Image 1 (tube, helix red, strand yellow):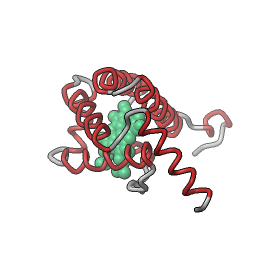
Image 2 (image 1 turned 90 degrees about the horizontal axis):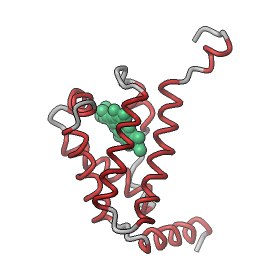
Image 3 (image 1 turned 90 degrees about the vertical axis):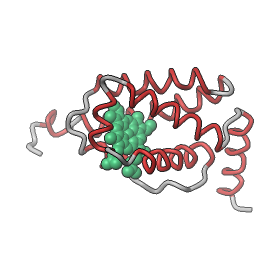
Length: 145
Ligand code: HEM
């Protein structure tokens, strides 16, 4: 077995020991986007883009989180361009997104470790999306972009 395979197996075993499996990921994604859709600030932003395509969006987001938590290799998309085009999204929206994400984990996470695992991943990705969306190094450098 290659090093990568051993790593993947250990990673999955650890996730499993936290109570993370495909069933939980599905529940987490459904619960989170129910909150998002009902949210006064975030709901309209998502609805404007996703419109009547919520089912495929949820399928994709379950693949995304399974790929992260269970290393299934199911998601090969690129989140950055999908968010760069959302011109009306602000930093406050990200804070709200993470707040709802945590609230949902409080309700559905099987263990504190499972909550910490997803909270950590979500925060890292949120930070990286925010860098791409809100930070322009050229501005600091006085270079026109
Ligand atoms: C205020 C914060 C956010 C807003 C308003 C937002 C909104 C959206 C919207 C509208 C889409 C659909 C784009 C499309 O189909 O064209 C999308 C896709 C997606 N979002 Fe977010 N998002 C936010 C934060 C995040 C965070 C923090 C993550 C990850 C932890 C994330 C992960 C994704 C992924 C993986 C997709 C699918 C991209 C693809 O098409 O492959 N989003 N988001």
